[in-house]
Length: 58
Length: 201
Image (cartoon, rainbow over the protein chains, first blue to last red):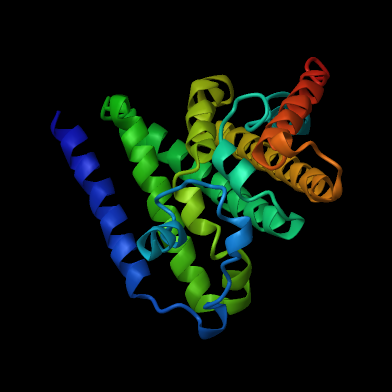
């Protein structure tokens, strides 16, 4: 049971660490307007940050 | 080990056990990112990279961490988090290193985090028992080849589907069938066509 808890904690920490690092990394200026709204509206993936922005806009 | 094993693993994963049309994994990006050929190819490229690297990582974690400690029952949650972390790292790396590549792949990377095809292929590589059949390290090569084949199959199908959808936009389709309904019918016909490839290897 202990190894399972340790490994789970490790992978959870790994995910949150990489998530925070990724959020703090600025996007390249040239890539700001790369979302093609027409071609990505059919997917209902709510984990996609562009989908979240679209929902907030409503 | 014979190179034929790798060839068979790639062809089998790409055509005979196609992740989208025969195992119904990764259907969300298949329908959502297939309106244009360019976006379909971008998604295919991003999935190929993450699927191969993710499969190798999860395979190593399973056989060198989970199995020795007899905690294989947490494999699914460990795989999900490792794949999600990998996607975050890849996105961060691309942001820093290549603006051009970020422009090409960046918008597809968040979609890959919840792409069940990636997790499905990682789980399948474990369940196929490559480590028991070829040994852990040789099995890793076969698992990577299988993941590469599955990713090629995903790219092939999503690109073919996007090409058909582009032509459908100009076709005279009954109003009730326009959009998603005709796309689902086309996907069904494509799945039937892929069933015909069963038994070639």
